[in-house]
Image (cartoon, rainbow, N blue to C red; front, side, top):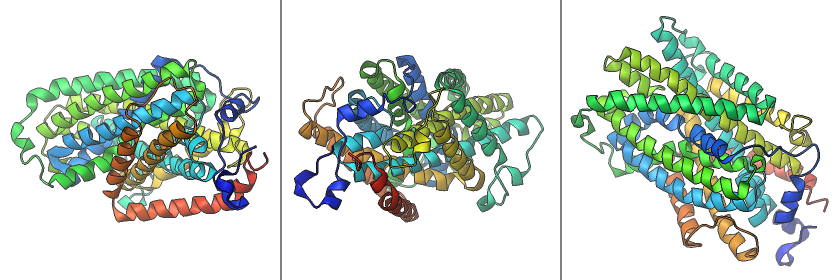
Length: 472
């Protein structure tokens, strides 16, 4: 039974009831509501690279360069990567210590209580759903480029939503439906598909660097900061969600064979490799095409087409499709596990916690796919990306605070991986994340506040009373 801290009134104490590490491990073993441990260290690293390398390179690099940072987008990636690296240490400690589904939601439940867990879980739903929506939109843009290079253009009405003068982004809907079906089939099948997509993606990026470096014109890097240093910071805030792949790795904790060893390796290794690729591609892209011409959904393919490498542009577009497919697949996977964990705790309807004979949360996957398909079909990529960023940064803040709290209140818990320089590194991570969040547009904050308000109403009317801790 959860204790009521600090002798607060009963209704206040309910908001701060926490789950012990033993409770979280026990619930992960329940028949009909458990996941199969089948992922290896290699699978986790591929998951991380598959989720990180994609949207930032293939979709948002051009938007950020053209609208916010110019060639300074290189520094935007560096800044976002540094903050992400600090957050990755935090996630690595918590994931190895509590290897169950739910990612930051689960960690907040252990450290800060049920209300904080609900807020971060609701926030993660926003983060992954809109991030996946942005990727689906980018996938559609590259798919249209491939068909156009083959002389089969898609009508604008079928590749753009109403806010961009179209009717529906049909390719985005189709790819989400296909990947949703794959996730329902099984985790092992999804991991194998991710391996293939990541291999194709890395080969294509190597090709882009090989053909792009000889065509760099250093004059295009001047002025390097056309929007000033503040543009670099705003750009970092916008592309930040491109780094959430390691967050998705932590969401897989309950399906890892040796989580205490492999989770930290997967999180930190995939982030380091991906950061190097981001910086290199951003430098080449802005060196071969003026940054003012990169405000398109598929900047790499468009850049190669512009400099006359039509064959390379088409090949990069095919590789981008593979890369974005892996990002979308991992985001859909992670979101479904958040739904699954919250439903298993009683905060959402129990239907989404059922795994059945195949040990995959099929109803959670279906709901996730439906939400992402609607976003991809109707909204432009910039609006979707901004919402994903604020969700990611909020998660980093709460998880960073959670590490500090758990070190203090549960020093006896086994920690296979330990964050260095606690509390200073987690505190700096939280402050840096908050600073980047402040750079996002006011309208993004207003949308985020509206989303949280809806979540608090749902918790007050449903989750608080249905929580498993409420029943002891």
